[in-house]
Amino acid sequence: MLLVWPVAVPMGAAVLTLLAARSVRAQRVLSLAGALALLAAGTVLLVTVLREGPQAAQMGGWAAPYGITMVADLFSAALVFATGLMAVLTIFHGLVRPGDTGEHFGHHPLTQSLLLGICGAFLTGDLFNLYVWFEVMLIASFGLLVVGGRREQFDAAVKYAGLNLVATLTFLTGVGLLYGAAGTLNMADLHLTLAGRSGETAVLGAAMLLLFAFGAKAALFPVFFWLPASYHTLSITTSALFAALMTKVGVYALIRVFTLVYDAGEPPIASLLLWGGVLSMVVGVLGAAAQMEIRRILAFHSVSQIGYMVLGLALHTGLGLAGAIYYLFHHIVVKSNLFLIAGAVRDRTGSEDLRTIGGLWKRSPGLSILFLVSALSLAGLPPFTGFWAKLLVLRASLDAERYVAAFAVLAVGLLTLFSMTKIWNEAFWKPHPGDARRRFSSRLALIPVALLAAITLAAGVVAEPFIDAATEAAAQIVDPARYLQAVGVTRELSP
Image (tube, rainbow, N blue to C red; front, top):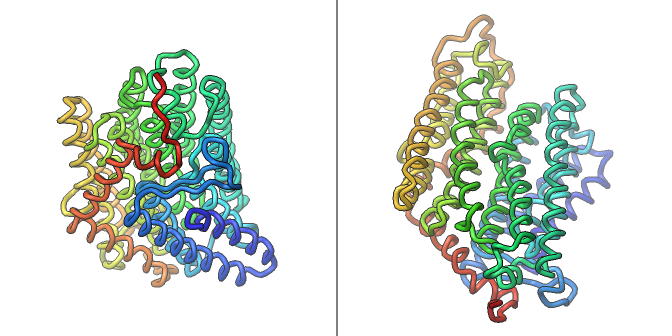
């Protein structure tokens, strides 16, 4: 039941909020209660995995690889916990900040459905069900994109759905090709079945299709454009939730499949991951430097930061994988907080356009300090989490003698600092141009912002336990023996 609750809770919350469609107040209570229950379920699962190792369950009593397997190792359990935490903070933020979420048009059922798809993707043990959970996420996220009914939202939704539908068809084709070649889609069973078969045309072809599909979900170069085209059109609350979790599911799928099913060190997979990561870092940060609206800057930076995570995977070392995992959790906290801060800036100035706002340092010193914590962490300055995340990826790049990648890590970090400095100078430091009347602002909406900033600072100052946890999660991924044992697939490797 431990593995069922993180899926059953958001599913139940989605149904209940849908049944309460006529009462926004009831939907709010049910949605927040569902998020708290998801956080509790994720906490229990994470504590159990820390104490007892990977957990697995076979749905319907059918043993693997024939049944539906749900499985959690340290990596996936920590992601479920992070999903619950971000759900609580963003839903609370949406309740105390009136505005643009579209609560009368299905916001809460769609949000719970999105959480359902995300948790299902983190916990599934086979590729077909990963495809199913991706579909749940796609439908829910498309609904959240258009729930406001604005023209720019429909334009963004078309771009978002277009590329994601291509990725979905590619994913399904890859799954079919792989099933034809291996006769199984259970990832633990595929680990054994595909050993020594990476050079077969069908197996390699399926790998390329899956790499494209997961790369599109993660917003990896060159299939990233749906992200900067859509995030700025969402409500502030939803954009923070998207920034925290949506691309992370794609990164999770890349790490899971290209360590357990395929070997990320095999050519041409290794080259595609390496250059996809490096080019994402560079193109994303250059795109951010050209923007003047805060959420557009942050969206391009998400593309850049995804590159760091994929680079950690591509280095094909334990340290690189630990760096990718640490970076992923750092980014969940920091980037979602920056999107919430973008909403606070808009509340206080009426705009996110840096050319039309200013003066926040004097008017909102508390908000300014909270921005500095997250911005400096994103740029990679000590003592924040971003410093340790970049340091791990940099060390792994140097150890693997990938000097071009190491140079890119440093150069992109400097350009990220430039972008954060631009936001600081324009929105916070320079005088407000024109009308400086105080607009609406909610102090309660700053509670999630302050908590996320405190996590960023605490996890940066006391980094060792978190780096140790990332290293342990990477070790479980590199050596999947306990994962296979938990699933119940322990036969000998194929010759």
